[in-house]
Length: 134
Image (cartoon, rainbow, N blue to C red; front, side, top):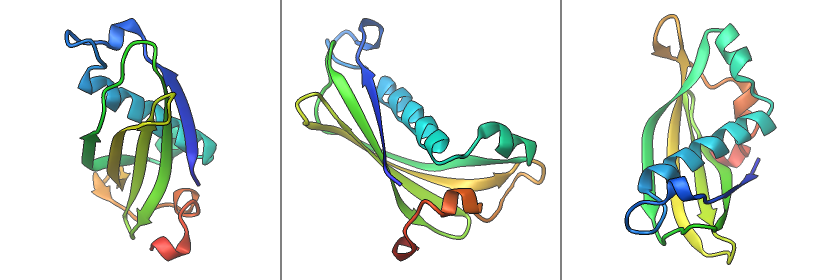
């Protein structure tokens, strides 16, 4: 299941070089991940109530082009790969001119909050990956 999340660059996100600060891209990524979870029907409250969560164990980012004040960004989140206890989501950020400016690959592990150990990926997440991706 692929999702699209949109955000406009505002003044507080601009650094002294006149473009979006690198940390803001991480914030954009997190907003888009939350959006993916919501659209996938995965409630953080439900996970928490069942003493589960997901933890980022690998975060790979490539800054390809700069984003500037007033840009409208589109973040596309796509499930890439699923294992027994982990899964990978890819995110691509494009500007209003459809120029690819940033890409992320984030590996998550399913996590038991009580035992503090990894557990199998729940069906509510796994169903959003193609079987050929396993």
